[in-house]
Length: 446
Image (cartoon, rainbow, N blue to C red):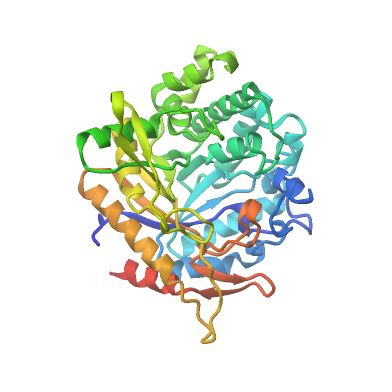
């Protein structure tokens, strides 16, 4: 495979999933701590209090990043580690931890890409209404300002939010993610709008305080892929991808979360669908939401197939019997990494980073002491081949972050899913490279 010479190769993690460092008081309580304390919410009854103990083992993990050959690392900052109550008093231990982590990365020649929010809302802010409280816009601005002043001298790449479809939709529409309270459609749409405004304020703060800042956002999507290369099927897939259809998690939309950022307005399909429940939006909201950004992150794991139907409608194509799937039961659809970035770049015309891509496997240490995750190697090769094809066809993709560097706490699945290139024994915290890590090292060295 051949990628541009300046292409960014990295791995990604999230604070709550790997850091730990909670039970000794090193960070404030989050909605995920509270959610995990509720019986039956997490598949194996676990939590992220210790997780991968990255808080104490960050030097070892940074060395793994370097040894594999990644030139970049996408990490998230735990808001409650810097500001235990979300605003006000600063936790100096948290300040020191991220200073040390960033310095360690830079010393090893690794460029940090900071995600400001990867789902772990401080519990004190949730108790004040969380994302439903319009004050959250300034709460997030205060937090962004602190991060910018502390680390903006060394960090220049930022993502404001990771997968708002999940921390709003999975949390408040389906109730399977923290804080797990299912809300009315009007309340959910209000929260989503507040998140978008918080994104805009965060962009303003970063622009003002970090010279040379490169800023984006990292939503997720499940791309619609055309059944054939016919113009009709391609147009149908594009229409399906950006539509806002009625579905179980109605927040699972590309255009609802992205059109306001790039076009300064919500998509017509969504306005029609949600008409009876829309909050009162102000014109100045959209000026704030559409503050210019530099790139567009996208987390893509799988996709679905669409064909042109009758009367210019699109139709979903049923998956074949026995279709390939990962351990978490997600379908393997490599072409999603071709069509997703292609359609997104056509519509929004911003350089794209694949901010997450990877697979969960049934990974265990074999008798020879190794982890033979050949399925993950095959998965990665297939997806990267499609990404390479898209770049060759003109899609401006700047980088790829593998999810994940190490096995970790996989939200409501607990520790039952393993997405890492590196195996973690949660009893001993020993890290062991899987075959996929060795493959990635060879791939990056070429």
